[in-house]
Image (cartoon, rainbow, N blue to C red; front, side):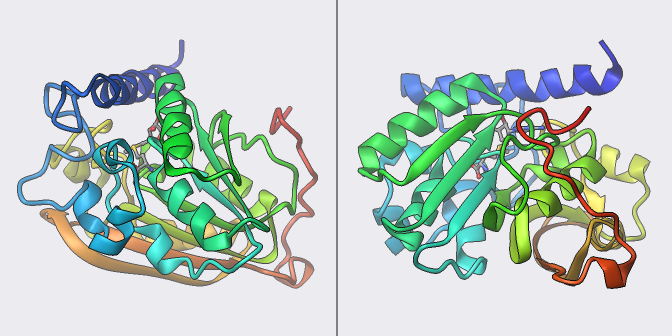
Length: 273
Ligand SMILES: C[S@@+](CC[C@H](N)C(=O)[O-])C[C@H]1O[C@@H](n2cnc3c(N)ncnc32)[C@H](O)[C@@H]1O
């Protein structure tokens, strides 16, 4: 196993533990034990269901709110419209998929993608409890999205891209599945540009959503290289010294040739060769 595969396996195991804790109703909402979840490794950092307003929490089953491990509220920034197709990368217990499904209504569709079986089981249960039918939870990697090219209007994600061991692949895949002009609205942890990779790792663990965070300049450059424009990275709250919960917004260019970008082929379920 490569070190990237080992890191991904650590991430999967931690979030499986977290999902089981919520399903057993024995945990405090995280269940990661040793301070290794997104929600509990920073002092005073805001994570989880507190980032949703009372109205949104009222739309959710208790277990979906309890399972929230995000660092923002992407549904609040994504400006979802009736009839749209939305994809949530790393959907966890399903909180943002359920809220998105309600926003896009019965003529729209909300997909959740996650690699962890236990999270998928929790999300499917939460969607049933919420009574939303226009949702589909897919098992897979955000580095190899199992959807066709140009099939999604909006990609959202909440505190997951920092956990990827291949961020360039994630951004390229987001660009592939979005229709031209499609939108990205992501919450994530982002470092100030002055922090080196070592300094980020000193501030928190990889599975805890800190050590793997991109800087603002890295995020912006990565999105532009993947074919996005109107890129914005806005810090919302500090979660550790020089590290922030952030909103990342961008639009997939409808003029790839002008930007000298390669034509992206539909890669299908396998994502790549
Ligand atoms: C910090 S939790 C966030 C869950 C959810 N977005 C929320 O706001 O509650 C991270 C989730 O992303 C999933 N995940 C992490 N890396 C992934 C990857 N490379 N591919 C697919 N899922 C991934 C984990 O299984 C976990 O459910």
